[in-house]
Amino acid sequence: GWNLLHRNQPVDPFSLVKEEIESVSERLRRSIFTGIPTLRSAAEYFFKMGAEGKRLRPTMLLLMASSLSAYVPSPDFLTVDDRPPNEHPSEERRRQQRIAEITEMIHVASLLHDDVIDNAEVRRGLRALNSVFGNKIAILAGDFLLARASVSLAALRNSDVIQLLSQVIEDLVTGEILQISSTDEDLLSLDYYVRKTFHKTASLMANSAKAVAILGGQSVEVSELAWQYGRHLGLAFQFVDDVLDFTGSTLQLGKPALNDLHSGLATAPVLFAVEEHPQLRAMILRKFKSEGDVELAQQLVF
Ligand code: GRG
Image (cartoon, rainbow, N blue to C red; front, side, top):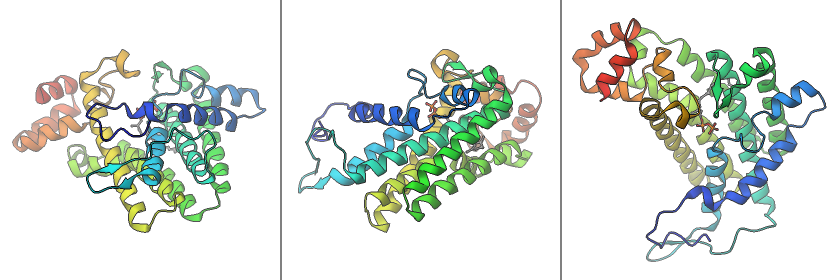
């Protein structure tokens, strides 16, 4: 049930909306249907059961929708609606589920294009789509997902929400450009890293969270808080992702460990280490750009 905040036991947030996520996944599989066989196989590749990834964004959005509609302030604490999840979601809830689906489509499209740019071989523990179908199909499959996301977005007939999710696509492009075109100065700048990370990772979470709040009929103030929540979650998520790139194994990560460092990107742990030892900055940059970057980064961090 939802009545969990009073209890002193850890809660797995994913379990709270598990069934609803399954229906979101089912709708996603249907909404990317196309009669063009090659495109169909490619588009379905990362929507097949068992290949869905963590579904972090849809989960966060459904939890956000529940928290906005169900929490009731009480004198001692927040209490929550204890009714079991509704089998017949309201029109409002269905529109919020559409945001969860659109967000996942944009996310997967960005992964497909990113893997082409990086020439990646592994994604979600499977062979990356570009390495199975080739770059041309991977790019077109990403374009196709963006097109279907736009159709679903337009069907919501809410210009603020359309604007928010369209802005995300531009932000993702900006984030990728910032990533591939950094100067030496940018490479070790924490400001630059945070700006890039906002565009690359946090904008999708921030703008989709705000869209869910708007569709839930929330005020401008609450919608803005939802945006801030998504932004902070996105930044924190990327910091953790960066740390796991250091500490995790390829098997745990579903992609090669030390991936970012091997491609010459300074990630959060390195940048925080540089903040603590500014006198080492020039040496780090020199080494980082030439030999031994991964080894150097590990020495710095551990
Ligand atoms: C086509 C919209 C579009 C953009 C093109 C390539 C590009 C511009 C942007 C890349 C953006 C990108 C890949 C950012 C990384 C985001 C990120 C943290 C991905 C990992 O997310 P997880 O761990 O993945 O939630 P799963 O597989 O669990 O869904």
